[in-house]
Figure (cartoon, rainbow, N blue to C red):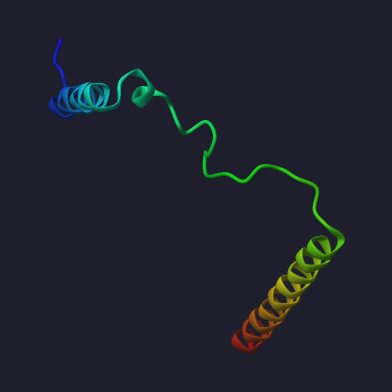
Length: 81
């Protein structure tokens, strides 16, 4: 069985980090802190102002998309002539 050197190095590195953390902070230093702040915002009910702002932004995006599509169609028609 051949081991990838990088994975062995990563395992060694992680175990070293865990050991140093344990020696420095004890068992509480090894607690997974990602559970409370995963980076993804929690789902919550939006206020009417927030809903309105999102809808306006979506409308503006769709308008811009429609304008771009019109320009593309116009350019395609000109190329066919």
